[in-house]
Length: 366
Image (cartoon, rainbow, N blue to C red):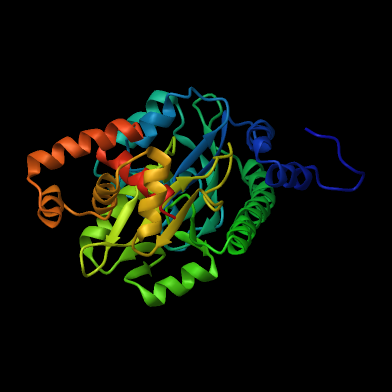
C-alpha cells in the first residue's frame, strides 16, 4: 500500500488516489481483498438502461464475458442482488443473506458461474444507488477463504465508506467534463448534446437547448428523441453505435422537413474512452447541422469533388432522405439514368455506399 502521512487513514489515501487516477482502482480493490483475507475484491455497476462494468481483482478474465451473458442485475438470477433487496437489510450484506436469497432463484446460471469460479461467499455494500444505476463494492471469497467473520465485515464496512467517497468524487469529476465540453462547443456556436455511457444526455449547448423548443427533437427521460417514431429509432441505433464498445462514428440521421428536404442532420461521434472510467463521463457527442442545403452547398460539392451541378443536387437530395424514385421524378429522369449518375457521384467522392455519401454531404454542406 502507498505510504501515508502520520495519523492519516491509508484507506482514505488509497481510494482518493483511485478517484483522481482511475487506473489505480485495481490496486485499491486488490488491497481490500488482501486485508480482509478474501480471494477477490469487486467494484460493479449495473441497472436498467445503465452502462455496466465489472472490475474484479485476481480472477480469470473469462468471467467477464460469461457474466455479461447473464442478466446480473436480475434478483431472480443473481442471489447477491436478491440479498441486497431483502427487507431490513443491513448496510453490509453477507452470507446469511445470500443463503436466504438463493432459495428463490429461477435459474442456476449465476450459481453455476459462482461454482465454476469458486466465489460463493463474501459480503457487499452499495456505494451509489438510483433508479437506473447501482454501483456496489464486494468481497468474493472461495472455499478456502471461508465465510466472512464479523471483524472482516467491520473492516470491509470501514473501507466501503472510503470507496463510496471515491466513487462520488470520480462521479463529480467526470460529470464536470460535461460542463467543460459544453463550454467548448458553446464557443463554436454549435447545437451539441453530450451523452454519457448509458446514452443519456448529460449536457448541451445553448444552441442545442434552443433547438429543442423549435424543432421536433426532444430529450425524453434523458434520451435524445424525435416526435416521429422512425426518427427516434434511427437516433437510438446511431447512439448505440457510438456508445457500445469499441465505439465508432455512426451514420448521420437526417430529419426531414415537410417538403421532403433535410431539416436537421444529426452526427454522432464517440469520445476517447478512458480505462477505469465510471459511467458518468462524457462518452459521445451529437452535433446538429440545421437548415436545408442552398446553392452555396451545391457549389461546395462541385468545387470539392468536381461534381456537376446535377450530381451535387442528387447527392444533396439523397442525404435528405429522399428515395431514388422520388429523386428521379423530381429531376425528370428515369431511374436507370439516375443509377448512372450515382455511379459517377460515388466514383468522384470515393464512396462505396449511400451512408458514406450522406456523411460527406453533411460535412461539406455546413
